[in-house]
Amino acid sequence: MKFTSTRKHAPTATLSQAIAAGLAPDGGLYVPETMPSPRTLHAGNGLAETATQLLAPFFAGDDLADALPEICAEAFEFPAPLLPLATANDHVLELFHGPTAAFKDFGARFLAACLTRLQRIGGTPLTILVATSGDTGAAVASAFHRQHGLRVVVLYPDGRVSPRQAHQLGCFGDNIIALRVAGSFDHCQALVKQALADPALQARAPLSSANSISLGRLLPQMGYYAHAALQHHQATGNAMNFVIPTGNLGNAMAAILARALGVPLGRIVMATNANDVLPRFFAGADYAPAASVATIANAMDVGAPSNFERLRWLHRGDDEALRDAFMASGVDDAQIREVIQRRHRDHGELFCPHTATAIKVLENLRTSGATGDWAVAATAHAAKFESVVEPLIGRPVEVPPELAALLQRPAHAEPMAAEYSALRERLLA
Image (tube, rainbow, N blue to C red; front, side, top):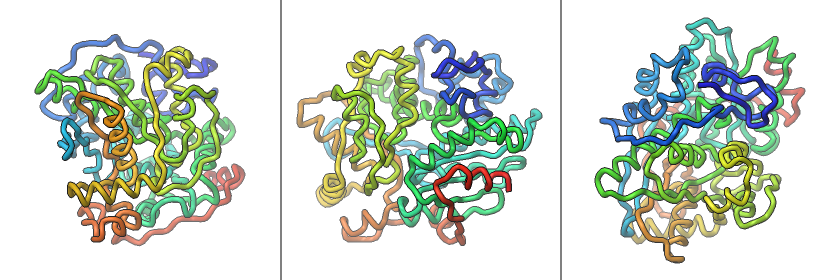
């Protein structure tokens, strides 16, 4: 299979080339030249087996094709259980059982497994650039820590991630460099894209991306939606609908692609915080990126979601068809806090702010008459946001052992201005 840019001004690439590059040379995002046809799929014995089956068409003919089962086994070695909520026909897909307690562990480990193999095939030393609004950077740092021939540079908005997220970002050392940027996530993302599109810099310091702009991050995220939906469909005969916390749109885009491949997914609803670019678009306004605002669901503080380009590509640029296919709904901080407090008090349920955002959207959908089976994607463990969650529930949140181990390590992050010259200088240092 070949891959092309959403902006249509770059040469086609193999999957390995697209994963190694991260961003297409014209600044666009890589997408399949032709989407695989929908087909009948079956849940495997585990996440890795389901993901291997689902992703096989994308790897056909590529240098990595024979290694796909091993790559999936390395990426999907922890569970993603689909569990019932207290309210009837509602579920939660827990995606936070990896080493950094966030859903991004799956995609980061998959990307690391791909790139380490490409390095062995004959790649040159590579720097992985990642902009993070909280969870991506730690997942990537964990996946790539001490991997030979690979350096990771993480950019995060200083003061706009939780204290535990910031500690994770700076606690690895070795081949991991954390830069705390004097700006927002949008500044960090723009700097990464500018570096990836700088041919003179690439000639001196080859770069790739580990954000959801990377196919190596995006494609594997289809795996857990496919496995949960296929298992549910085989057990009940019903399609599972999903509400997905949404920032840069990668996680929701993965579910959308999985449905296009034949996975029995029903409605897909995007839940956002006060950064309401997507809700305004789906309500009929023009797509208009805006400066992001800080919220307690900080990993979703994105004002220019990159994967919107892929969403438009999938619908051939037809915005009306896109609006007919999906919806997005925003939730403010007060509503997020109320959900965390009430659901814990009434049902003993414990959610991070991002998952609580999706819970509120699901509650609103039910109130407006939505029927069928629904699941919320639980994107992070509540322990990563103890400063928000603990005052609301009135008790400490138990910290998962792997997260606790990371929090015991010393951490350091370098300050950096939100200026491209500063990033370029650091990358060449």
